[in-house]
Image (cartoon, rainbow, N blue to C red; front, side):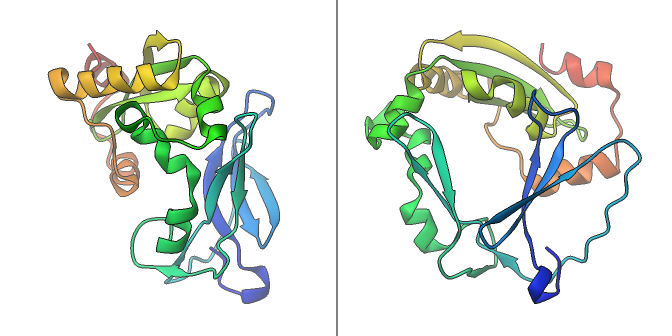
Length: 203
């Protein structure tokens, strides 16, 4: 986040589309999106403020696509990426429990109807996780995860079924479903394992 109020931008992370030549850093200034290309050997200078701000919330359209809304109050945060108000409004939250509760807005149900994939990803510090992604995000999901090594291991007809499989992998194999962002970054600054070792961790 850039400190000057008139230039302050909220960082939404890295996006890497198969339709773009390089990944981009996704920044938001009010309702305006700024995509900074992360081309090889390019330098970007940012001044990061002391306060984290809420990144807003997601609503789902009837066709299964999503809309990202800015936080109405631009609240500061101590932890996480959302304030309590935006967390309540966020319709994507139902995605993680839909296979247990069956509860989701219509747009999210439409999104979950498409084929989904199960992947196993390893990070630079050696942590390995299991995760899921939709058919439409299959290419970008792993690129945005920040994993050093990753592999798709299963396919299901819908998002509910793939999350059942994800829970079974966690239960029977012991792979976690989340790796903290700080841990990912720390691994990249003190990389002790080579790619062969990380790939072997996925079996």
